[in-house]
Image 1 (cartoon, protein in one colour):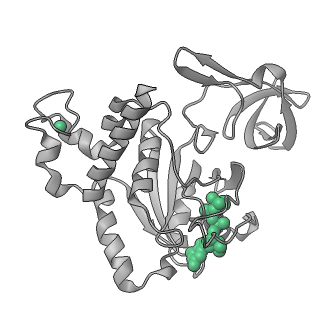
Image 2 (cartoon, rainbow, N blue to C red; image 1 turned 90 degrees about the horizontal axis):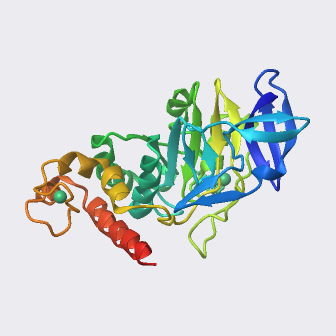
Image 3 (cartoon, rainbow, N blue to C red; image 1 turned 180 degrees about the vertical axis):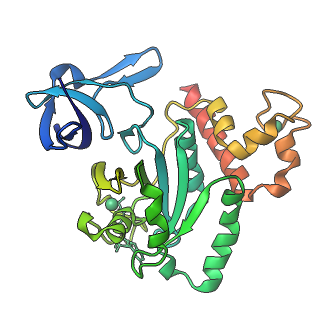
Length: 295
Ligand SMILES: Nc1nc2c(ncn2[C@@H]2O[C@H](COP(=O)(O)OP(=O)(O)OP(=O)(O)O)[C@@H](O)[C@H]2O)c(=O)[nH]1
Ligand SMILES: [Mg+2]
Ligand SMILES: [Zn+2]
């Protein structure tokens, strides 16, 4: 059996790269791989996704190798780092969506970097104001980068981040993921599209996850999202994945403290050091997850 890396999937056609010959070929998945198995409350997806190492023969994928990790949104496996792409304007920057994306990636325990795009659309005061707020994320361990693909600002600083890694660009639709890839390497020629003025967001220009070769690694362009659900989340996931809160929580009086109404909560005692929107988003996500659990 030959081994290949899945680069892209379009309508049941798999683009895979043979790991011995480096040849890129088209393949189909054998019947047994084309379903999703539900075991107790866990969903085990056995269909190959981008980033999977598969075993194949005669242009048919027969099995999927064990994954190091896997994301559902965007749909991708074996990721070394997720680079979250958020525009400072058009669409407007959203702390809620940023915290939500961080939560989803932290749940899979994958490294995160944050890139703020379209800085050409802000004046100096606006940009400094955003930087000040976002410095909170640096203080809790997330590297932050500011770029403009349009005026080629900050792009060179990003390039070394991708060496030898499978990186996934993920984030809000219309934030400029595909544009950023084209700025990093014009040979990528990814499709880009105006954001909708009426909806204030992107038009889902990128429809499918695609791994692009770069610097001994791969960068995945992915479809953006305007919101993310909490499917499969437990309150415990939330508490762990807000890693700034998690660090503080070992000094909460109760070990199962939710950091909401409990007495002697070390998170609440430190609210003056936590970005206000971050705690508010925590509360919103808490309510959402609880609501989902009721059904
Ligand atoms: N002013 C400005 N516009 C940008 C910049 N980067 C991207 N854009 C514009 O933003 C729009 C959306 O860019 P895309 O690259 O298609 O966004 P995307 O994140 O790939 O969107 P989806 O594929 O739908 O998720 C396009 O009209 C781009 O020209 C930038 O740095 N500055
Ligand atoms: Mg795109
Ligand atoms: Zn607490």
